[in-house]
Length: 585
Image (cartoon, rainbow, N blue to C red; front, side, top):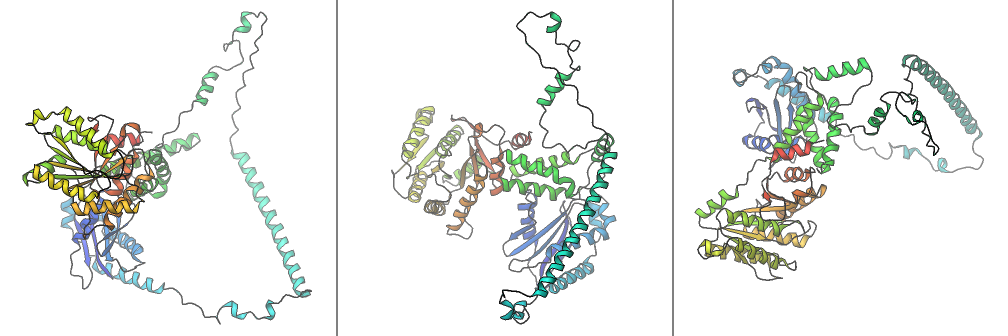
């Protein structure tokens, strides 16, 4: 039933593996895909992963830095896999605990882990248990209670049966007696608890005497009556300061742990939280994770993404031994910071300048397509990227494929005129560095893009920037037209332009844009979104959660960040600065 099972360390050393009977294909590809797409990208919230026809389930052992992976065919429904992988983890840990405690890759390589007999026994027990738990067969009508009812039993009589009434009365009396005895027992328990609590509780400190109200008289008063210092008044020293502190009580940090009341309880609780050599459990992390989730949502991270991030951090830390003099809150915060930095530095890095020079060597233009919803600033940021490319010595052709919105072509023509005024043709051999290719409104956008690419190849332009119409992710006809434009022209780079202001909407936009591109593609491996341009980043202060949501959903990098209205206001994303703003209380 299982295709393979493998146990390897987080350092990449395979300790033991099993391959099912009749399985000839290597499991290296699925496991490598799991490592690249899930484990390295900090997406451990869900313990399952699908790769082609295989379904993979994995479990992390944070104490010994191990990963357990099982693979089986996607069409099978194996209900015992989750419990089976837990059992294998426990037995492997218990059997080779001494070997696993030894640190170092060479020591792991020198050890032999003979686990096949025990593994097959656990697998056989799990399969037999799943067969024993097969659903019970459906009862026939004769076996049901409904078949025992007769027509006579369903007819109601006026008088009823006296014996039944008397029996009913007896039952009611016994119920009342039971209720009364239960109430008396409950009252006694409450009385005993009240006695113990009154004796055990320490007396409450008396409230300080309140200040007397000031009386403002128009008549002449002596200077002594006007002296409201602590010597003359009834207020205790420092009371005004206490009242001010009560009014302006600072808000607790989301990373602080709940404090315990009481002198010795608070002291021992603090020492218990600080001293290391303690393995973290889900119960220890739950209060901190709850605060973390609310904090991320307040910073504009989508709610689903916040929950998945917290779940991923919990799985990453569960069972891990804390360091000396570290608290649960600081450990969880550091793990979250590392995860967020890893998410903002995804597996694929987009280097446009290098790719443009590679396209130049092949004597063809480098094609970039911009897509996104309405009003996010596609045309404005296209002009900023044009200016950036011109500054780096490349010539640009802008393809006006937004044939839907009134004024779209005129907007691009204005940008072309301004860019050419900043870089006059006289400085570039008499040739304009930016040109606009347009065919007016109401035409097929895919056809215009194809003609623009052919024109750029003939005129030796370095880069073609394709501007498309803004469209909502729910507009099926426009999404089909965008998928057709990308499928026909096959651009080198597809950039999604999104606002930094959105929260949950970012997830919906990116998921549906990617889904539309996949559904309407003509090839088996469709072109999806390759990168993100995040606009209006200067308007959000420290609510930078949209960057996390968009990168987490697509797994693609944020190529540029728009920070203003001028052509120079284009930046690359600093992952650590974004995470620092996100974690700021």
